[in-house]
Image (cartoon, rainbow, N blue to C red; front, side, top):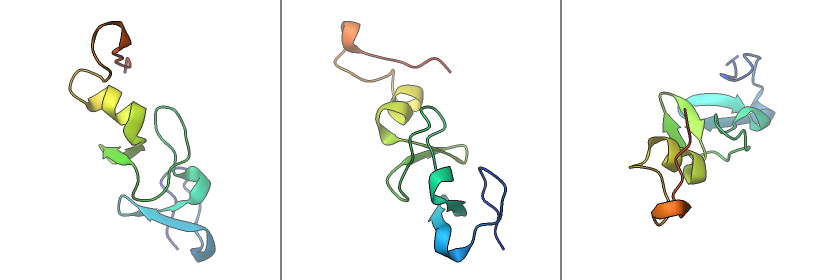
Length: 78
């Protein structure tokens, strides 16, 4: 039985979500930064960890943050 990479408990077929080549419990597949629950295939990955595409992944790993520049641009601290 596969183990969830987030909670390390067994993942049963009825509750399984496959993403990043691993089997997760649906509520355990969350953004590492904001903890928003993600859906399989609609998120980004960095070093094997899931992130929501906007705003977390773009702000953490994108080219200099996001926004239109100036005061509206945002860059998360790590």
